[in-house]
Image 1 (cartoon, helix red, strand yellow):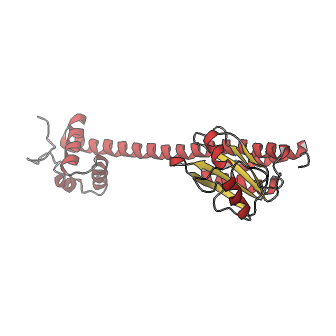
Image 2 (cartoon, rainbow, N blue to C red):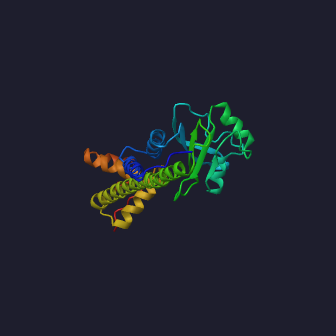
Length: 261
């Protein structure tokens, strides 16, 4: 039986977890969650090993982050093995194995834990996550995760769930921002190339864009790459040769660029 956890201890752990969950620029989801499992080892009474797992394609269990001096080959065991971690992921419900010598629900998994020196475990689903994920703690001592330890583990789970979603959202937004920046650079280059044709060939905006599009298709070249090439050639004072190469010169009888009459 665990000693009752004092309120001030819970408050201290809550403050530490809030700091652990603070994102920094170079963090990714794995790095964020690894901080949680490392703190679980030092802050949760009797916790000898901790892992955060997620449900991958085909209902396979994937270890996202783990920590402990005596690591398990896989905290969830074999993907086909009935076990509390997999059930917590599939049903998004808590699962607890108090004593491998007395609990009869997962015989194969009990043997798996016993072979690696563990006697009890507690698996809690992470809340507010789009994909199924769970926080699981293991102990070499039976009956370690009673009511008080369960509440502390739940505190870890709540913080880790928020961090999981925040970190994922943060990096999804970074990727989106990168795509937006690329799109803006592409539009700028095309607009500049369009302006060059309007200036040097006397074309309208529509005619210049049609000429660029036709040249890119004829050369099997992406429009943004052609535009960037023309802009670079202009900065290097060789636009005439570039226009001739891509048959965009106004006086090219066979080119796609035509000076309006």
